[in-house]
Image (cartoon, rainbow, N blue to C red; front, side):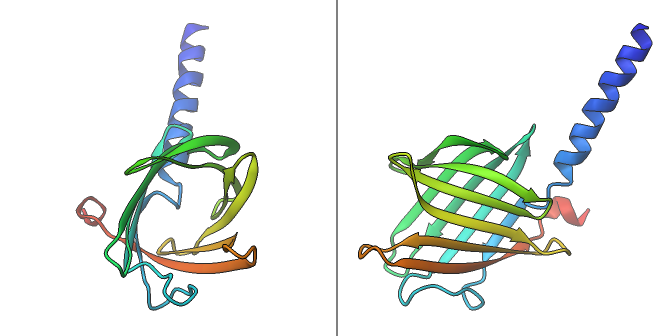
Length: 162
């Protein structure tokens, strides 16, 4: 009976590792500004997003540089179950986020302020796993709906080449 229990535990752990490794969002993504669509003057000069699996969660880190030289960072670890988590920036707390997986290649991130959704980002990884498109809808200072589309290309690391 103990052998059976150990085999079951081993099988569950192995399945979890395989599923985590297969998360198409895991990796390093670099913004392709030429293929992206932002309101005039809003497109970042550069942005790199790193996502890695952490158990059942995804660990997110981003670094952004804007045309005016301003830089920002964001990081969080979240499950895909819709639970709200804190987002940390270079200067402290940012708007909390919750993630909900729609299918294996689609995740919706909702950013909150005062218990209200202030922005929604739909992240879709292409079937070949090389392009991630993030469509974000939010409201501008005048209360008008604004949509931006960021196109990110997967960066191959040395470990992936081997």
